[in-house]
Length: 128
Image (cartoon, rainbow, N blue to C red; front, side):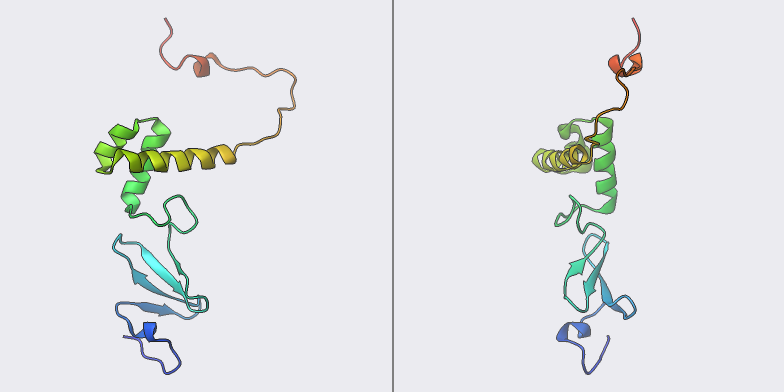
């Protein structure tokens, strides 16, 4: 336990580690991610802060598998079964991730008047 005469009541909680250089103390959440509490603003931050996974209960392994499945184009139902999540949860994460990807697209026009596209992108399967 950490005891300090000028520390707030929450500094006596256990288990935690104080990192005074960073101005935060560390305690572990149920997901296994370290949570950091800022000593000045009392905010709690972790790996998911500021991402689509913020506020959710996904383990890091499930988050990576979800991203892999979305990038591969797997259906929400297949991902839900694999990750043992509801189809609605997977669908909502998919919508958020796809919206973020769309927002990050480059909006500027191509500089060339003509653009060539490889046939691989037109026909995803084998040639017939």
